[in-house]
Length: 444
Image (cartoon, rainbow, N blue to C red; front, side, top):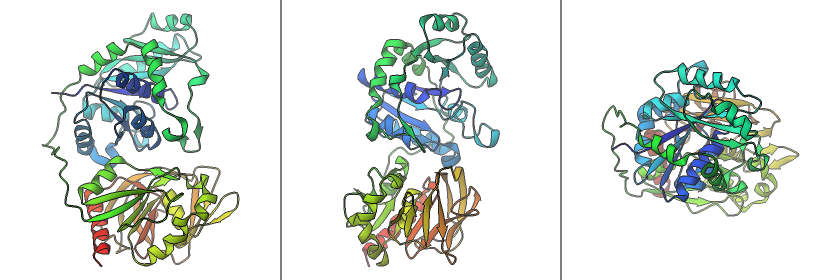
């Protein structure tokens, strides 16, 4: 039986699809439905809101990082026990890599055989909206459109001017309201724990949209075309090691699948706050990305920062990404220079413009810390900082796509510590190697 599912796509970034998707999730949850949320693409921020609304971890679906089979595998595993899946798209419906639709929302729609609701920002338009919708509808005949939701509608008259001639089903409209926006900053929306739940948007969906019709559309989903049998058992190895995972306001960017993959290969995950707590009693440490630049005074004086260098010098495996990478360097320059861990050979600097944005692909090129050569990496980079490595610094990865730390090199390392600008989507091999390194450290 095919689980009911619906994709909330947009005409472009900023059209309101996160608000609409979160509202639909909240309205369904309020009706007692077990909603499994998903987000197309490499985003960390929108998933935090969906997780908060649904009470189930939001999963990323990204054909570039996961492959098509990986998208199907994650979808099928995550929807066990759910009543319905709601998938928020990325950018505009057809926007993929390098001007193609690879890794676009439309690509994921085809993989999942899912119907689409198109969110259209109609501010400043009336009849022109019809041409826009017609273009999206006719552009790719393989996409099944359930209908549209009109966002930022000015008045009832404005709504009628558009809805009377719509070429597809209208599933609702959202009035123009300045009081229902979510505050943003340099990497996007604020995280869910900072802004409160988007559950309040569920009332907007109930009031202005046809939730029953949306459910009916989701129920028309077809069975997935799985290319080969996918195990859904979630079998995991016996616990081999404990991995401390930094999780607080400064370090909060993690793919849920990465955490699951570490568990599957025998890791017991111990979450801790570098802002508030000392280095945990663990066999390896994982520092994700996030916003360390917003908490530099606290990080500079924290017990974790003071202890971490001596812990790393004992050989514990440490893996860090983006914000975590910066944290492991000697210092970060922002409004002033803040002394940090001094584990990796270099220093970091915050800038006022994007330094890198896009997908990453590469391969490890030598024995580096705990990682052997010929390990492939796929992921995404997005940061407003730059890292200045020491002249004799060594790198773990040579990238075939992406900028990395400098000139297509990523993975600065020292001893058993490794840091990348890439937010990697873990392969089975990487997860197994990292857990095995932690196990060896534990048994020394």
